[in-house]
Image (cartoon, rainbow, N blue to C red; front, side):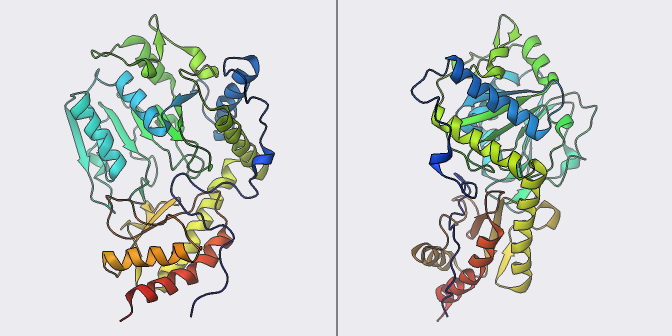
Length: 371
């Protein structure tokens, strides 16, 4: 029978992701609206976005945080165009976004790359990565639900830089900052912020590369991080390259305030882990649904991906039923991934909403596959 209790918040999209519990536009500090982002009040808000991010994440001394255009994609591209070319490059890809970085490095920057490929659901062999080269990888494969389990495979004495696309991992997973030289993420993932802007975090090693190496290709203005051979420090103090949305900045600051209020990143990680546990219990009790990641230690606790004992058309029918019932929006698998479900379980999602969703998953599956 059709369940009666619905999730209070049916938003399980993997980006833009659900807003924080209790979110309201009325709670945003909009004093910056209508003001220049270069005014004192505008720069102060952007600088706070950088400083609060560093503080809450517990970044090591010397790491710089900047707000950049183009969401996480823009941040990764800035790093690739500005830093690559001095050394060889290893790129890991086991889902769509890693494949995109591989394509850009080879087809646009024309670099010779060592590619480490993994099928959907599996990581590539991490032991074969050459850290004498620069290494690019996603920490959490948003479109496959597969994450790297930890940073033990990254040597502390590496010669190359590690460039980590961590957009659906930051604030939800433990990150070994000292082993990461470039970290990128976007506001609309774990914190449920707005789109268009990305965060770029650079280690001192990455800054040294910027100041001692100049790529051979022309550098678009949006990617330039140096002036006169020195890193543009203002970029990491709220002086953005382009004009940001101050409303989106206010929204991000609200999310950071929420993180601090609930106990910091330790609590956002705990919330994400607890949400994954709800789904793990459900999968263990139902043989028609399985995790796409084949190794439990590599299961994402944010972009949780499933495959079903169903045809692609049956999966589509199931997703439509859940959407029409108003219990789960935007939970279809990514377009390039195997047919299935992708349920966002980051820190802004309440475990109680996941618990309410589960009977509906069973109902929709039975409806879509009967007769």
